[in-house]
Image (cartoon, rainbow, N blue to C red; front, top):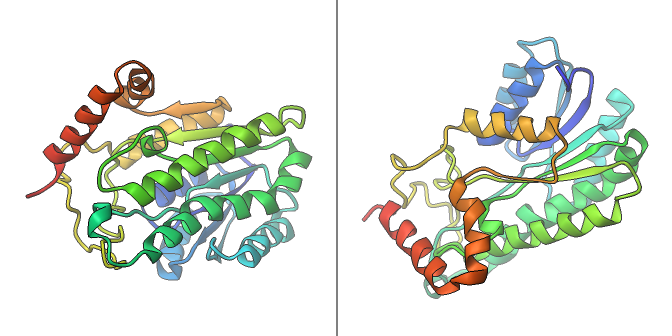
Length: 269
């Protein structure tokens, strides 16, 4: 129970990876500060976590607002007196070809949640993480490593996230704070149903065939916790995700074709 009595702030805790991760950490006896915009979903996660011996609080938070991120960390300190781990998990998807976009605000919204939300939370948590010689966790994506058709805005936000945390890791080398970037592939959550379409509204239905190639969310969370326990620099969850960045250096055109073909194959017609 390596995370017993550790204070962990987790964003995006209302559903999907965040909810399952919260429950798994609660089972280990972690002190949890759960954050999300969806208050109803957040309360459901809180209720699931309180079935265990962990101390848990829920803080409704819009990570696109710097003041909200500051208040989140202040409430964590007020309750537990320290922050040992920050898990930047809040995220939103985008699924549409660029030439079909009718609402350009999608790009700003996706960047605000996926990238700037992580920047804001990290900024306000960092002094406390330095004090605890803690851990920064960024839940990114294989999309942070390579381009993927129909995901221009999402890919851009994850590339930004990857670059930010890779650079921050260097800056923090002498502080005792470690940075781990987690890169899942397709995971069995509702993120694609909630993704923004060409008109800027949630799709409501995944354009992808969800019966193919999805990692169970429980396996994804198991790997996240494994990487956190070891304070790894980076963890890429799929073999394809590990190979593609290296293959892109040698045969970039082939990688583009393989990636595009994979998306076509798993997209419902």
